[in-house]
Amino acid sequence: MKKKTFRIRKFINDIHLWLGLGSGIILFLVCLSGTILVFEEEIKSFFSEEINVEATSKKATIESLTQTLKTSNNGFVTGLTIPSTNNGAYEFFVKKDLKERRGSQVLVNPYTSSIHKVEKTSADAFLLTMFKLHRWLLFDTAIGRPIVGIATIIFLVLAVSGIVLWFPKKLKWKNVKQGFKIKTSANWKRINHDLHNTLGFYACFFILIMGITGLCWSFDGYKKGLGNLIGAEIFNRKPPGFKTEKTLKKKSISIDEAIAIANKTFNYNGELSVSFPNKKNNYYMFRKTNDAHWSPVTTDNLYVDPSGAILVVERFEDKPLNTKIASLIRPIHTGEIFGTLSKIIYFLACLIATSLPITGTIIWLNKLKKKRKENF
Image (cartoon, rainbow, N blue to C red):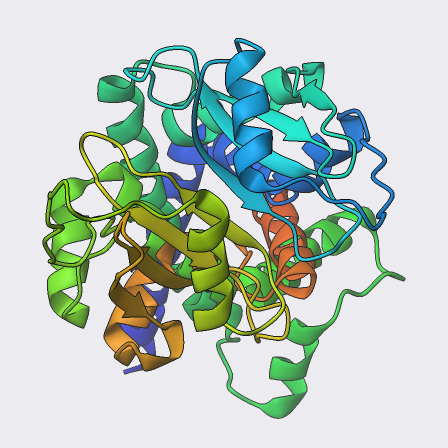
């Protein structure tokens, strides 16, 4: 029985070793870029130019600010984000051509109506490179996406097999507790082994979460399958079913009146984003985040007819659990789910994951040297 158990353990060890060596460089690059992207928004904010906004008694209306942007030839205003504090700039989304996918961002001081176009910095270019490296290894998406996906599957196998190998051959508490700490007083080979074994154990849970959710971007079939498993569509960006009546008799409300309806519906302090009506979607679409909520990335959604009639109210807390999980796949993957705390945890877990291919390779090289010495 012991001999059979040993063979199984050796088989698992061989899988762990060769899969790790074969995918080491790819996993290192994906994990390294992921570590940097954890604090993507913070890095962008640090390198971007600050806009000082001092609150006064005179505050311009959204309607007038929108007209100011139009007359200054900035393009078509498609929406904006209003901060939850009074000393923040309004972030308008502007497109030179409505066929553009993203457009550009323009910051506006609501008290002075001064306009500041958000310019791209070297940090933006660097983070875009990290994003492409993380998702596609800088290759074309058709090539890079499946490679990253396969590497992610391998990483999941490595994580599970690593946990199995973490347990000692003799399951005694004296042996098990050694796996919880790094013996810093030992030689460098033992320290390297403990860094791989112990840190890998602590990061394993988060590696599994990141891997399971990350595959949604690599394989459409997996994304649909996971959605079927939990009973809710993942990355569902479609608006709820409703119809807006087009009639000349109805008077359209102003942007400010629409925003007042949204703030009355969601009567709490938080950041409010709005997409303006257009030819494709003839309605206001609001997203509001509650500053007092347990997660900074959960939003309540509101759809308002141009006439002011409320079409649909979607409160995050009212959604079924499976729908909540499906809508949070991205923040669960990136670590944004609980704000700064979860980001720090994810950063450390990603940093450990980045080190595992290195420490694992060193362990293998040390064993090769040992075998060569024994043979001689």
